Image (cartoon, rainbow, N blue to C red; front, side, top):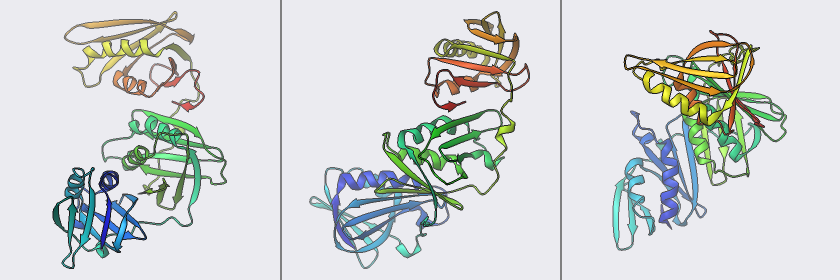
Length: 358
């Protein structure tokens, strides 16, 4: 194998695929990045057997071939060569010579035959969504996934596709996030439970634009094709919780209030409750006023916010951290909080929003 390519292009490509290089494995080949030179291109591939990222760049290919380079060192090395033309030559002993300006280095590589094949989704069901809508959906639900391994299904994001919408759902046992986005009309009716880590990496690679992107789902895999970049992830082969049973069917109390004022009041109230791991803050809703209060050995704080109250008066306590986290993902100036009673979950939604987000 012998080729010449632009250092900036190579560095960018390596940076993208390196996110899929395995960091915890007993198989050395998974710590590497596969290079394949053919037909005027260099294809880079990395996988940890759950997530795979492939990137193609233009190259002047003198001799076609393939090999697997040590991922971490190669990524750090080419990052220092963005201004150079780079010549890569694979010797008969399996060492890759990296030549740039008047300097050169060598890396011991592994055989490409040992590298796992990446799944091709030939007969997949497909849907098309605007790129920034896809990114926004992932951003607004992925924060709610569980971080421990006690319940594996909660480490994934559920994607439900019907004729004209994509619904994303995630929960960790204490909170649930749901977001609905429009898609191009499709006959595909399907669902997929995607590992949150993989879905987040996919959304980071999808550029923030109004261009469409095609998502393919086939059995236990999902892939996103971005032209010169393809990302493939395994799906979780496990049933998700029936989340619709968790969402309250009716509400006795609804409060509409300014998001910024609520967020600031919460941040102050939580200062005292931080010493308690529950971050408990009491909510009292009466006569168009929401009173937030927290107590600890240090002292107490009471905050009052004028609200629009519909329904019954209510007193309830929550872990305030859940509210402060969700505020980061609400774009509207005001929010509505819906309550059933003093012991049931509440629902937080943006007001005046065209999307379905809670």
